[in-house]
Structure formats: structure tokens, C-alpha cells
Length: 603
Image: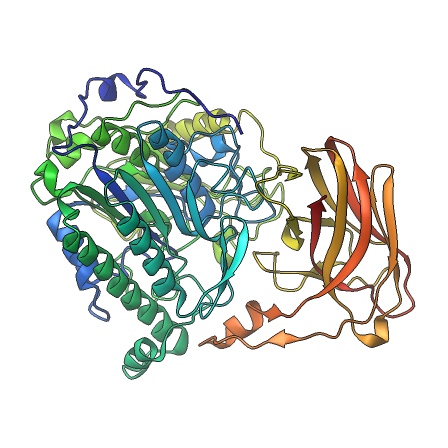
């Protein structure tokens, strides 16, 4: 995929344009950016949680700069889109966490691409969650080395099969340890630098799976299973961060390596135990849903360790790193963030007043839930219901009236002061309206799935990326990562994928599926334009794979199966957009089959 040439630095405001570049004392600094998944602000001992200990992360924060009011989205994928591009997520095309709503446009310039022109070698290790097919993948977005997985979560944390580039690779051990080993290998191999290591752990996101020694410690304290596992996952992460920092010391790289630590949204299992006095957790547009840690350490910069109190955002990280590393910004979409260097250097007087925004991108039709944050106030408009409104339907019009909180006197958001301050509500809600109109002006849509790229051949089209007729539905909830389609009990129902064929040619097609013997024999047709293939569905017994979940909900929500393969033959596809459709021509049993994915291989 063509990429942008490096041109003169274009910072995003007259404020940031006045900043001079930081000069690394011994060449450009290395970058280690660590992000954890679903770990809230309160899930660290440095923030007052007495139930667990995170000494290595605490020390990282204490040795550098702690951003006390750092804001992200309250869902995974939008935070990552903003972090990697320096732009509000909706601008990048990311407006959800599944169904390919989580992807960012290939035209976006990521952190890896921005640093590549300055000689950085980059690695994306762990969870990506911004697109599953090339060029939406890390390789397509500029990363040199890739190891992990592309979708929103993983079901098995022990001996997982991950991706190296686009090829599957079996691993041995606990996933957070495995990812740390891979990051340490990358650092060791590229120690002559400069390197950029983006280490995106998938813990402590559910399913709650952790080695016994971590789980047993917290279970002995009387916590219920999901909390014991969650806190155990947090302490395992802290141990792994300690290993990483120890390696930087051992290789004498710590002095000139910028280390960042953050999380992607508010907490989950631990919120009910300790939440640092905040309201809400993951998916909430209250403070606890989007306020997370950001720690930055760079010994060579001689920053005095301190706590920075002004409000800052995920969109600020990319311009900050470009500034610190003396890297010119590539041509491309305009950045929304600004460099944090004044705050890193303790120059609070040079920091501008700002207004930050949060939007929960449930569906391309929904403007809310949303929130506005100034240094003093938080304005919130919610959609009530399960999971903080994250299960709202398209065009949901049930948003509550605006709520207003004074975060200086009421950090727990206990007293809504909207009625007493109508002018503030009017001013901030107008800013939200203007902001949302701006960031969604290009329109929001589910991107078609690209096939035919040599960088990813074969390519899998996963069930959560499909469209379907009722009564077909997902096996578990709304169709998050690793789910499949089931209940295909009506022969008139169809399943289809919107695709974009980038290279015309002959494609071998096969399905991952299962079908009990009693339901075998359905005749199905796969059609793409004028091309089609028909096949009879053979019996494929359901083979569930036990997973080491610590909680009962995990056993229901996260399931793995040994899927069978059904070959449909070869179809010739012309270049361009198309619809790939699966339909039943006959159904002798009670259902057609369960469908996990469609795989296409360019000959």
C-alpha cells in the first residue's frame, strides 16, 4: 500500500508549533509504549488500591511524569485508533468494537508510519483491534514486526495460537508472559535502535484466566472468582513490566528509551472493589469510564518526577512522541492532539485551556452516549440500560438530559448541577454538537472486507463481520470477537459479507463450520456476482474445547470449538466491490449449520 513521503513538520496548533524539538543525547530515543486492556485507574497500588500491589508500574510512574487526568475512550478500539493516529476516533473511521466498525482507514497515518521515515523499526505485539484484514492490519498500517492477534479479545490465555504477521503460530505458556518474551526479544534484536515497541497486552480483559499462584493469592483473601482472577492478572502484568524495565537496565538502554504506560478504558471486575472515588467503569461516559493512567519516563530528558494535573488525551500521545524524538510529521490527515512536552517539563503556565470529548460509538447512527470535560466540569448524556448503554439499538433516542458535575468539588459525580447552571450546559453541549458534527462529517460505515492482497493470503472473513437474516444470530451476545453464527433454522435466511476484491483471479473457498449428524444434508450455494458454487453440508459433530475460565460467566460467554472444514471449490472473482452470499437451497434437518468463517485463497 502506498505511503506518505516525509515533509516539513506540521503541528496542530500555533501553541504546539512554537515548541522546539527535543534532542536525544545519543541519537533518537527508543520508544516502549505499554498499554493494558480493561485495567482502570483504580487498579494500581500507586492510586491507593490496598488490595493489590503493582510495585514495578508504581516505580515507573514515580520515576517519571504521572498524568493525573488523562482521558481515553471508554471502549477498546476507539482508544487505540486515537492513540495510533493522534486523531479523534470517528475521524479515522473507527466507530465500534466489532463487525469491522473497529477498523481505521488505511489512509490514516499511524505512529509506526510516522516514525518509519526517521529510521525506526517498529513492532506491534499483542492486541491490535483496529481491523482484521490487510491493509487494516498492523502490517498494512506500517508495523515491521507483528505478533499477537487482530481482533478484540482472545478466548484462551494458555498455549494460545497467535499470529506472526498473517501466519498462525502456536505458543507455550501464559499469554502475558509470552507477549513480554516477544517484546524483550524485539528489544534485544534491535538494541542498536532506534526502535518503537508497541506492546498491547490483552489482560486483564475477560475471560478471567490466570496462573494458579496469582489466582490463589487473591482467592485466599476472600474475593469472588472474577475479582481474584482480575487482580491476579494485574499483578502478573506488573511482574512482566518489571521484566521489561529490568531488560532495559541490563542492556543499558533505559537512559535513552521513552517508556509510556497506559490503559485503554475504565476498569471492569475491580471497579466494585476500588475505583479511586470515581463514578462508572468501562463503557460509561462518566469519569471512571475514560480516566486512566498515563506514565512517561525518559531519563535522558532530565524531567523532574512530578504529577501533571491539566486534562490531556489519547490524541496527544502521537504528537508528543514526534516532538520528543525530533521526527517530522508525514503528510496526511490533520492531527487533533498537541504535544505534552510543556507538562513533561513542568511548564504548566504554557499549557492552554482545553475542552475534551468522549463519545461511545455504539452504532453509526447514534450521537450519544457522550460527554464533555473541561478542567473543572464534566457534562454527561447517557443512554440507560445494560453495560452503560453500550447495547443501545440503532437510532436510539432514549438519551437522558444533559447532566453537569463540578469535578473540583464533586469528583465522584454525586450532585447533578445542570438545573442550577443552564448557561454552562448550553455552552458545553453546543461544543459537543459542533465537535460531533465535525468528526463524523465524512460519514460512518462498515468498511467492506478486502481480499486478494498477497500480504494476507488466504484471508478469513469472520462471522462477526457478516450480515444475516433472522432467525440467524450470534452464539454469544452481540457478536464480539471469536463468536459464530447459529440458529440457521429457516432455509430462506441468508448470510452475506460485503467484500472488496483487490485482485481478480481464481479463489478457493472453504468454510469453518459444524453440523450435528441429524441436521446434515443441507444444500448451500455460495455466490459472488455471477460466480457460484454449490455443496452439500456434511455432518461435522460439535467439539467444544474446554477453557480455563475462573468464573461462571466466562464459561457461558467465551467458548472455543474445534471447527470442521467444508470445501466449496473455486470461484473466479473480478476486481471491485461485491457481495459474497451463502444461502440454503434445501434443509432436511432443523438447521443448516453453525458458521465460524469463510476462507478465500487466491491461486
